[in-house]
Length: 228
Image (tube, rainbow, N blue to C red; front, side):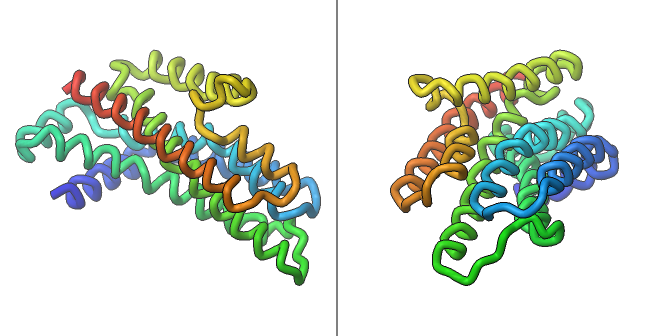
């Protein structure tokens, strides 16, 4: 049931055309980031992941908000379970961010902006790149759902709240004492410019991302349930 709901929600979102603008912004950011010449894979991917994060949040917002209120109410009656509907909505917000993540992984190679070297460090840098790109997808998704039109109530307020939320994550991320209140995108950017990160460093980032996603995801579900 959840799978069918997710598929239906995605089809409506794609046909609505609301995903085009955030996808275009994400593509533009990637093109800009990777137009500055060749650089180390670790630093290139870390910077790209941090800068594309707002586009992923916007995509999640639009994916959730694309379905009209009347359709959502009909789906709730048809499914008969508010919990299943909320899970389906969260799942529907995920694919668009995954598409951006996949493009983020491939784009540097197509643009020739990654310095390829035949050594073990390059392999570690590629593993770091994959972790960096994927670890920010869940936080971006739940933040987009929490600040979506469905959760907030109207499009204008949702746009303002979403913008403030993204800016707040950047501001908090730069404050060592408050960095745990934001997704680990600033921490990832710093790791990308530092010495080769170790497994414990990456583990801390992954745990941070998972915990932040769980907490904000719970708030997202409560916000959606209150509106329905």
